[in-house]
Amino acid sequence: MRWGRRQWCIYGAAGLATLASMRGARASEPVKVLLVGDSMIATALGSELEARLAEVPGLDVTRYGRSSSGLSRPDFFDWMARARKIRRRMTPDVVISMMGGNDAQAIFVGERSWIKWGAPTWEETYAARLKELRGLLLPREGTWISVGLPPMRSPRFDAKLQKVDALRSAAVAARPGDYFIDTRNLLAPTGAYKERLTVGGRVKRVRAEDGIHLSLHGARLVADYVQREAVALLAARGLRQM
Image 1 (tube, rainbow, N blue to C red):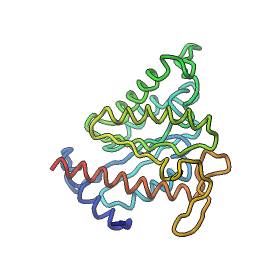
Image 2: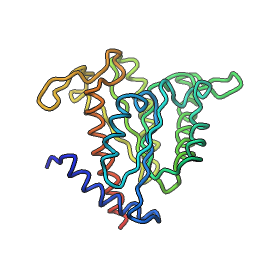
Image 3: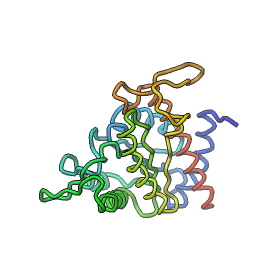
Image 4: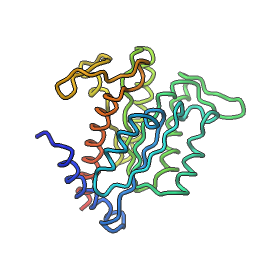
């Protein structure tokens, strides 16, 4: 059955109320959702996703995005330091993260020291940073949802980001109750990069001209999908814990 947004909101509200009660809060208290990430969250996709999640009864949504940021280059933007500041202002129940598009490069580890992309310790170091960010932003009992990156027009760049996404997926797989939402099949149903897709019976441009970001139509398509998936996952988690 194909559910409309209102049906998802009703279904999600029941499960999220249960989730709220299981974490020791009153069922009437909102579940605090934090959206974090790079330009995907800082621009159209983040804005569209924030609006859609805010429509769900029982969710209190906060968004923080920083373009060109990631976990490889804290010399440019330090997400760990930012996470500490965010936690002083709020304690989220759920974090939805979409970042990694700027991370397929050498990792800065301080004192003019770098770990080259492809080096034996690169994946281990990056995985450790994913774990650290989760620990700084989210209580142990919270839920982390990683949103997968869209396919890239450049095959070489896309192959690199698939490696980054594999680490992001593995990080959530290691923790029961955390999730990874894949967007590749949504935006590349045949497996190949697509600039245009049929949306609502009409062919629309879903990718930006740079072959990396999403157009407004693409942002709305992905935001609708992530909202449905995230609400269903959280509702199911709440219902499983009854």
